[in-house]
Image 1 (cartoon, one colour):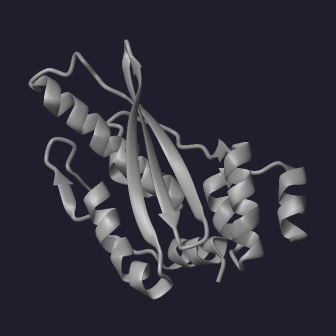
Image 2: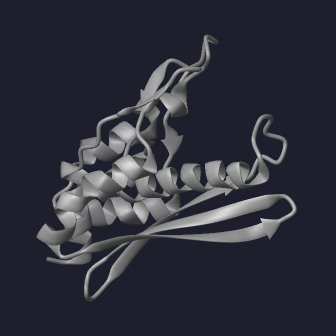
Length: 177
């Protein structure tokens, strides 16, 4: 099994409950820890590891680059999230501000890697009582390459359509794989 096939299996079978509750926004969400816990059954079965690396890529303003990687003994694949540190966050000490940005970055890097649809996650869509329309985003070239590998390893085009707005050319290219 290639690393692409292993990742595809995780992406298709991944399940993680939203076990955390935000009492301010009154919604449930999943954390990076929840996501990592849900990947553990796959680690032994597929002989893969999941790691997370954080790099401070800017000091002023502080910006973290968080990379989530899945690897086997031959290859690895990764996904990145870029998050800023809110230095004006009221009620938090400086370490808490960095910790919050770190947790957020880990969650979204893992979400990008495992194709967790953040549009269904309340902390991504909570509008705090304001009307809001959710639209699909265009697929990036990096995600399009991952989508091609996903389709090649048996993934469904509908799964990609549900997450991204594809051009006719992109859809045609994916359909022919």
